[in-house]
Length: 517
Image 1 (cartoon, rainbow, N blue to C red):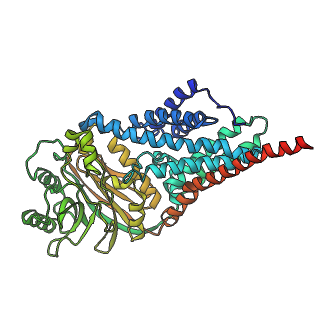
Image 2: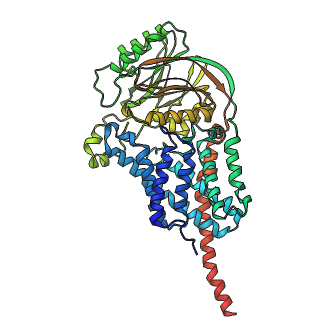
Image 3: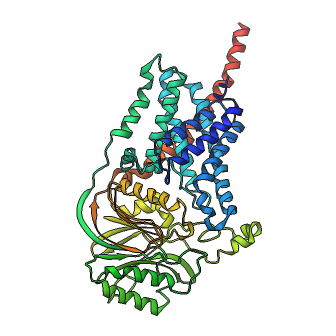
C-alpha cells in the first residue's frame, strides 16, 4: 500500500506557497542563504506520499510562488505578460518535475524499506531528482532558464566553496541531500535513534568544512572597467551614439593611467564597428589614448546575420583581433523562436523585438597580450558550458559584460552579481563584471568583492586584478557530476518502477499459490 501523504492537500498547498516565498528570500537582494534549506524542506514535505496529480498541484503552487517573486524584475518595462509567461512556463516544468520527486518517495522505500536506506539512498535519489529538474529547466525549452538553481543562492555563504569541487549542480545535490536526509531522520523518530542523523550530519559537514579548491597565483592584470550609465535601456530616449559618448566620457579619468586592458560593458558601443568606419576609427583613437587594447561589445552584422559580439580591439592592428558572439541569446529578448506562433498570441509585444540575434559558436576566450581572459555576455553567466569552456581554454581571469538598463531599480542586477560571484568561487578565478548602468564589481577568486560601482552612476574602476591558473575539479569533472548526481535519477527511477511493478504482480501470485496449498 502506498503511504498516505505527510500533509493533507488543504495544508500542503499553503505550505508549498510558503516554501516558494521562503526560497526566494535566500537569493539576492534579500540573500538570507540559510532560508534555501527551509524553502526546500517546506517543498519536500508537501510531496511525500502524494499522488501524481497531487504532486503536480503542490509543485505548481510552490513554483508559481517562487518564480513570480524571483523574476518580478521582468515587469520593469515590459509589464505583466512576459512575467506571467516565463513564470508560467517554469511553473509547469517544475510541477511536472515534482512527480519525479514524489515517485522517488513512493518507490524506493517499497524496495528498500530499512531505516538506513531511508536516510541514505532515498535522500540521494530525491536530491538527484531535484538536481535533474534544475538541469532540465536550465536547458529546455530553447536554451532554458537556469536562473534559479538552488546552489546559486549561496554566494554569501561559506557553503559556496564546495562549488569549486562539484560545480553548482553538485552544490545543489549536497544541499538537497542534507534536507531530505534530515526530513527522513525526523520521520523515523531520530530522537529514539540519534545515529540515523549521521548521513545528514556528514553531508552538512562536507558543506561546511570542505575548503575552496586552490588555484595558482599567476600575478595580476591592471584592468580599467567603465560604467558609462548611458541611455542603454530598450525604451530609453536617445540619439545615435549616445551610449558610446557616455562610455567615452566615463573613460576620461583613465587616460594617462597605466592599463593592461580597457573593458566596456555589453552594448557599450551602440553602432557596429565592423561596418561603421567612424566608430572603428574612434576605437582606434581610444586604444591609442589609453595605450592598451580594448575589450568592447556591440551588435554586429556578418553575412546577413546579427550577433551580440564582444571584440578585442587594439590600435595599429588589424581589428578586431578576436571576436566572441554570445552563445545563448535570450529567447523573447534577443530573438523570437517560432515567431509565427508567438506573434499570433501577442503581436504588439513580440513586434517590439525587431533584431534577431544568432547564437555564437566561437569560444568565450581572448588572449590579451599573453593573458587568458574568459568571457560571458550578460545572461551567459548562468550557463555552465560557457564558463567551463573559458577556463579550459586557458582563462586566468573572467570579464563579464552586461547591460542591466532594462531592469533599473530591481534586484535583477544583484541576482546576476551573485551568480558572477559563484562563478569566481567555482573556477577559482577573479571576475570583472561590468554593466552599462550598474551594479559593477571586481570579484576576487574567493568570491569577495574587491571594488565596485553603484547602480545608476557613471564611473571607472582601475584595479590590479589577480590572475590564477590551474583547473578546479568543478571545471574538469563538471559534466560527469551533472550526470552522476542529476540525470542519473531518471534511469534509476525507471528501474525502480519496473522492479516495483514486478513485485506487485508477483505478490498476488504468491497468495494464490498459498491458498491452493
